[in-house]
Length: 313
Length: 326
Image 1 (cartoon, rainbow over the protein chains, first blue to last red):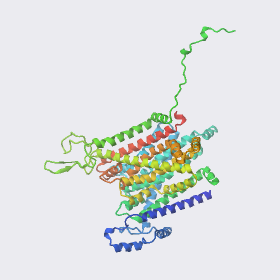
Image 2: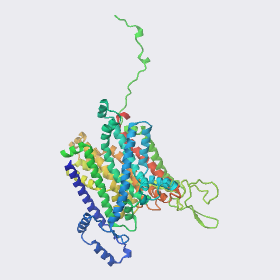
Image 3: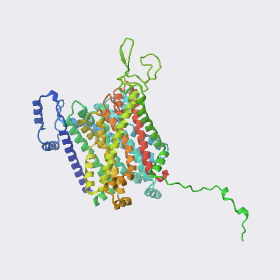
Image 4: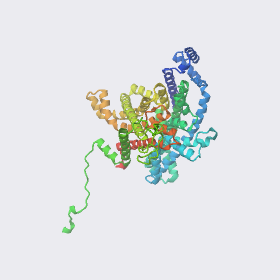
């Protein structure tokens, strides 16, 4: 197991390095200039390029950038409007996004599992239909549309929640974004759980357990849920990623200072801020790869068959 | 010895007997179609999508306004007045406002354009983007996966490492990088769909190919002297169509969704062009004052997503019918 984990970690680190290199090169070979050309003289631009080390060979730039990254800094923003160090802003935004993201994943997983289990245990009855309806709704309605509805009805019509995100009232103002972000997770997990549960319930070993006299909650927990959970872990990985994308819009709608909003501003704001895009891209990729890594390891822990085959191979 | 009485016998034709019916063997696709059409949900999905497509194709054609046309009239003192932000109305009502004889089923937007026309034009743009992108993705992903799976060994190794790296870059990052390189608009949306969606397709094609390449008919074909590409595209490809079509059906709603997302964030379709996403974005800006503006595009989006998902589920079930369903 330790060897497997070590190998996976090494692979992830290498992938991240490769991605960083690709992103770095892509952003450096980009057409145009990072500076507002019409407002600066040629000399100023030359001087600025010199200052930022943009006229060195690209490999040297990459090595410099990597050493800067490893020492824990993301450098400064390139644009004239925002030349401040990136790290403090990024950290603040990450914390905001992270809190809401974790909240919605926890909520989504819990509710999704509950709905899926209830549906599977009441197969073909009214509750099953209701659960199916919820999971269909979650797939059809984008999270930001749900967010707009929530905001319209529960902040505007009935002013119960704050209309925009309010850091001083974190709890109240994080409920709506977390809820709408978790909608997709709920429906995906519920659907998946239901199908997996049904498959396991109809399997021979559960019939055997029933024949031995196990019943009720004990049976579900010990035999059904544990085996049904294995594939469910795999759907959570893509969900973490869809969360990033969803967060981008939700943060725009609700005015949350998060990484998604930072990214939108960096791309679509006044002039593209190259260093921000690069820093954010690296952070997103690192998060994604880390999520995949954790889930892979979890998968190995839950399902012993995975690590056994890995050892042989 | 027992002597049979006439009463011991009865005419067999009097009895109600069930006779085994013989089913003629059906072609693969025919049986898939039969299964699909028996599924209530799948047929509902088909109808929903068909209705939206019909409206998207014909509504902008027969509409009395262009989708970019700003509707205006000249009033009695010769001043031009645009039909800004009118709520939905049907012509021939009271003569209170200047536009009372016009029909705006979904109202007009804040520039004075007819939302009925714009909604269906937007649906059309979104559907075109989805179909074009997914079709190209299918071609790329399918070829890539089949080649990777068929040749195996070093080729497979290299191709799969490449996918692993591309696949570990979050979609959001790919889109952001593209947004810097390219002009905002339809091209950007299609490009980002092209880069992200083919991976799933290729994985499925590869898995299918690995299963099929050991089959006897492939061996037979090879013995008869067929080249690799003949085997891949003439022998294996037709047999992988089922899972690939299922994947396509699930990719289309993802594509529509991505388009809506990009346009909403502001790197997709730009005004005065319109798509579902840009209409939702425009509606969102006025949602507190004019909530009716956001409803039509959202409903169209939800119906499309629902329809395609139902069709996808239906096809998946029809392709691999379980015993209990038969």
